[in-house]
Every structure is written in C-alpha cells, then in structure tokens.
Image 1 (spheres, rainbow, N blue to C red):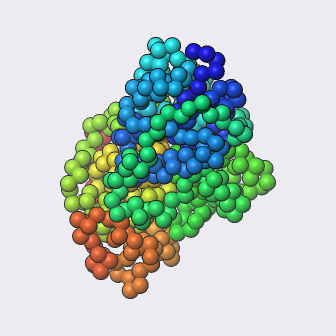
Image 2 (cartoon, helix red, strand yellow):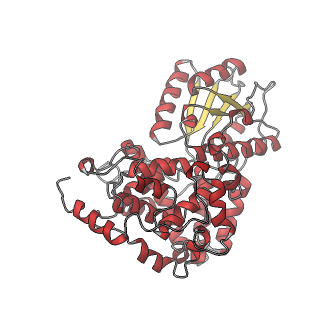
Image 3 (cartoon, helix red, strand yellow):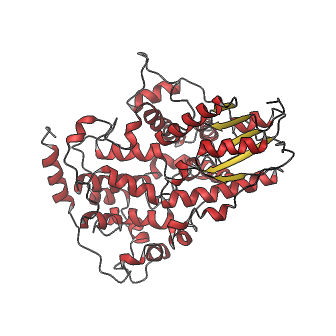
Length: 473
C-alpha cells in the first residue's frame, strides 16, 4: 500500500471529534480518512435502550463529521469481514480505532487485529477511552489492583494526558464508499413506545456533552460532595450518559475537575475520585473479565441466590411495584429517563440481591436492557459491589434499609413523589409518563392502589442475615 492510501477510522465508543488521538493522528497524516461505524456483533448484542441511544449518538457524530466536510460510512456485519470488504473497496492501507477493554470487545478486536495484520494492513489501536491504560498500572509486586483506594493512590501520582485538539481538517478520499442508512438499522426497534418518553431526557452528542460539563463545573460541582447523594436534587454531573458513548472524553472531564479544584470548589475532589472509579472498573474488567458474567470471588458460587426471573417478587422489582417507595421510584426513574440516580441504584440493587436473595445477574441484565448510560465495566462492578460478591465490595452483612435510607436522603419525599403516581390526587408529569413508557402487557394504571411490600425491610434483612450467616455457602 502507498503512503497515500486511505485510513479507515473505526468509531465505536468514541463518538466525538475532540480529544480523539486516533482521529488526530489520522488527520495529521496527510492521508485520506474514511470514518466508519459498524453494526457488528458487539452492537447487535446490546440491550434495547443502550442500542437505541447508541444510534442517536452515531447520528450526531455523522452530523459533526459532515460539518467538517467528511462523512461517516455505516456498514452492518461481522467486524472483520466488513472491514476487509471496505479495505477492498477503498484501497485503504490502515484501520485504526480506539481501544476497548470489556471481554466482548476485546475478543472482537483481537480477531480483527490479527486478521488485518495477516492481510498486510496497518491495524492499530489507540488510547482515549480511559485516563490510564489498565495494563500500565501495576502494584509494586507487578500485579493488578483489586481494591479501589490503593488504585486511586497509585494513579494520583500519575499525570493525565492533556486532551488533544479537534482536527481542523479531515482529508476526504477521492471517492466515498457506499454507506447504509442509519434508519434502516432500526436500532430503536426494541424500545417500542418507550423511545418517545425516554427521548425527552437524552443529551446527545459532543456539543451537548460539552455543555453539560460546563454547566456542572459552573453551577454544581462546589456542592457535589453532599448533593450527589440526594436523588431529588440535580446534584450530579449526569455525564455518565455521554462518557458511555465517548461523546466526551474522561480526560476532558478530569482536567475540568482539576481546574475546579484549583479554584477551591469543594466537590471537585469527590468528582475526580468518581472518574478514577470508572478507570478502576475497567482495570478490573481487563484483568478479570469474568467479573461481567460470574462472581468475582469464587466462594460466592456456592451462595444460594435465586435466578428465576419469573418469580412474582422479581417481576414486582422490575416494574417498580415492590411496595418499597425508594426502590420503586428508582426503577420508574430508569424506565422514564433511561438513567437512575446513583444512590437509588445502590438501594435498588441491594434490595434485589439481599432482601429478595436474587442473583445479581438478574439485575445486571435488566439494567443492561434499560439504561442509556449502560457501561459494561461500571454496571458489572456496581452490581457485584452491591451484592457482596465482587472486589472491594460492600460487606455481605451490610443490608441497606430502604426506609431509613429514604428518611436520610429524601426527607421530604420529593423523589418518591416525582416518580410514583399511585395515591396522589395530581401526580406530576414524570410519574404519569411511566405508564406511557411501560409495555401495555404489564396492565398498570396510576389509579391502581400502591402495593404492600413484597418483602418488608425487616423480614428481608433477617432472611438475608440468616443465609449470610451460613458461611459454608
């Protein structure tokens, strides 16, 4: 291949133009660049809500590239075969992409790199999804970190690379290859009528992500340390949605947080710790990929969790009808907005795994289907932390009381009022939207009576402690 052959730039979870090392190097190479997004085996396996939201992000990226005089070529099929076909059509001499670290993506990427190299192509992966590459952070003994605090201390001694600038120009090829139409992929098909509701709460694309970060730094980061625990308050950054699809880079968020810390904004340190937690999740997924599908601690394989999703208790949990207001409000918030407050996620996960003694995989799969900010590493680590089976997890004997948690973090019941319509004379819009988003087959109405608890906090705690007390599991 000549040095002037095109570079296929394969976008995945990096749907942005700024702080994109692979794009920057490609655009500075002097060679034509052909941006590509594939509906491949990894995309096909995603749940309803993440796949739909991914489609919105791909559309926004296509618009951004178009404004630069470039295009986003869309193709559907297995990654290796589809990239080989594009190479044959375009005469490309290189395929570049941003690294991913979850097991499904790694399996795909290793096969792609090996196959393309066999073809004599420059197949290259770049940094950009994390602040610190998981294979570059080691303990003094040369292993990986299994506990967050030592990991945080280790990376705190390292600098985070300055975000690279957006290319001023992306050289186009002499001729563009054929592209699929995004709408023909029907990425939102499984959302059914829920897409219309959740679509009112999304924040799509790089420009929107940058605006969200700027607003958070300007108005909310100072009180982030306290406000982030209050589900009725807009106290978080809400950047998880955009970080999931790479519409903003974590390095951009980090440096914004550092500037806020230098300006004396109190919550900035907590914000920076949360960004490190995201890196830690990928550090663990990279080194122990089984964390996404099985217990990280093998002794938990003997724990008698129930995995029957047909149980009435599990159906009630999924539908926000457990009779526990904090849990039900959390599940309904997710169904309407595609997101869930972090404190509420912890309570909902704890209730399922401990009060209902249900396997964390049941909850993990449901979140994977319902969250617009679903992230394979953070979702796995969060569920295993809540269940007690993961690294650095909450102690098995710590069973959160969802009633006292509500008293502490939602004293005025503003969060519950916003999301649970039953029993209210004039329910707010958000509470009513839940009934427009759910499947009609659930046969639920805001006029229904609010249910009694399927398992009371006291009963669930006692039952859990009795099982946990048997350390032979």
